Image 1 (tube, helix red, strand yellow):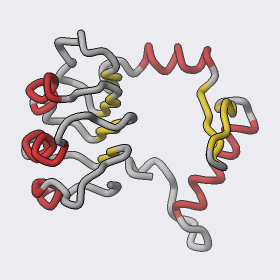
Image 2 (image 1 turned 120 degrees about the horizontal axis):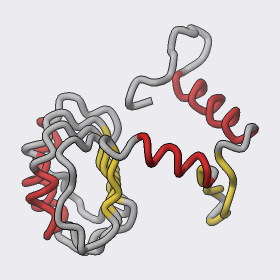
Image 3 (image 1 turned 90 degrees about the horizontal axis):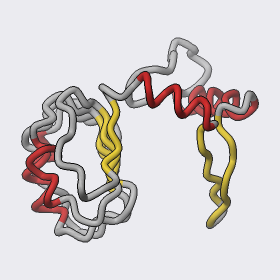
Image 4 (image 1 turned 180 degrees about the horizontal axis):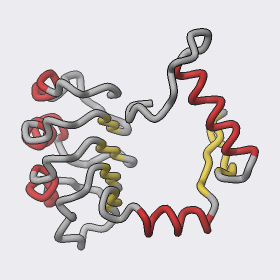
Length: 153
């Protein structure tokens, strides 16, 4: 939805409902497969073969930061998935991704994310999706208010 990939021309359905229908269709053709149920939520994964194909076709636009040993993130990346204990050592390389549209932090970060993300977000003017899992703070980074294109937080 955040990337505008769903057709919202249908006046009788909300975009969220269209998205759910598309997702159910992909489940029915085994594009996604259920893997786990926790806390009354079902989790899905993409089929292995489709994952490999998608990964090879999208390596310029998508990047998974899962290892603290990674030193460089390609500058063409538009969508970033983060799964590290500390994002502090990656702050400089993430701040240089001026075309970044998505940041998804899957696991809770051990850093003081308010100040850290305030510094990172100042350079990411095209960001549309910001997902901070288990964000524990009573205050949002001030730079969130400057993100004109942010659709989903």
